[in-house]
Image (tube, rainbow, N blue to C red):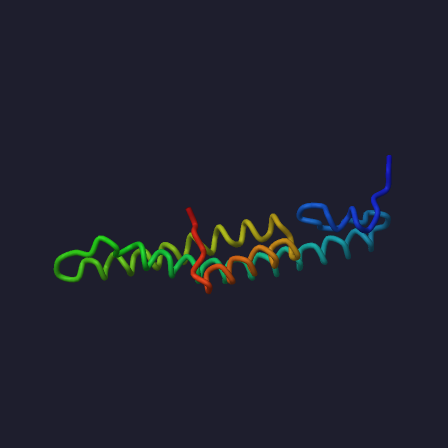
Length: 120
């Protein structure tokens, strides 16, 4: 079985590293990967929740309405977009790992601020 080089290890999707050579190394590996996954999940959920709230608010009230019902649609869309964006962003960021999620979220932020983000 071939041992992977450092470059190959960095190219692995979701590149969490594991070391089970001893009990202390296994515990350290597990703890560091848990912290990395937690950090990536928090970062992903916060950023995608904000983007989801904005998109949900914009699209939620696009039909307008009589007596302010378009505003209710905006509010429901913003809340639903916030919640679903946070859940989806956390799951995706944990799956990608810290480095992959930072790259993906940076491109998401740049495209959102530039006005070129198209979710569909």
